[in-house]
Length: 181
Image 1 (cartoon, rainbow, N blue to C red):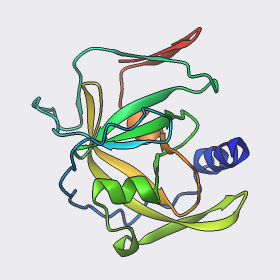
Image 2: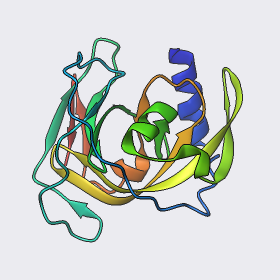
Image 3: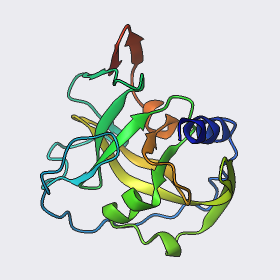
Image 4: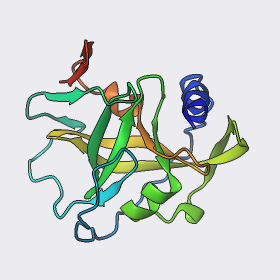
């Protein structure tokens, strides 16, 4: 499975996503939290959206520190349009890449999104559907109008890529701690 992540990240980093024709969509209602384990592949709805006013693209309440997980990756709980999605931070991914499962949990009708390209994965060539997310918030650092792709492949976990990270003031890794500002 790690090979699929690496392959997908390389494809996304190479700019294989055609982001022209991005679709804007509205999110659905968040369901109550189900109390499941906070593992790396969990989608957990959050009972609230962002409460702070935002500038046109970025609003920040300081900095966020993420500890390195046992698999050597960094994970963040991102509030995407009111739904909490556990994501692997991937600075090599050019856009936020959502699994179909996470996209549907947010309220995206994946089958109605335009196909904006394809990705070569370990499982073969799969379509990528493009979307613009209204808001992606990681512990108070919110970015609005984030380009994303829904990957029709078994990635296992969504990726927090450069369409979010590049809007921040800084992304630093020191030892086993990643800091977002």
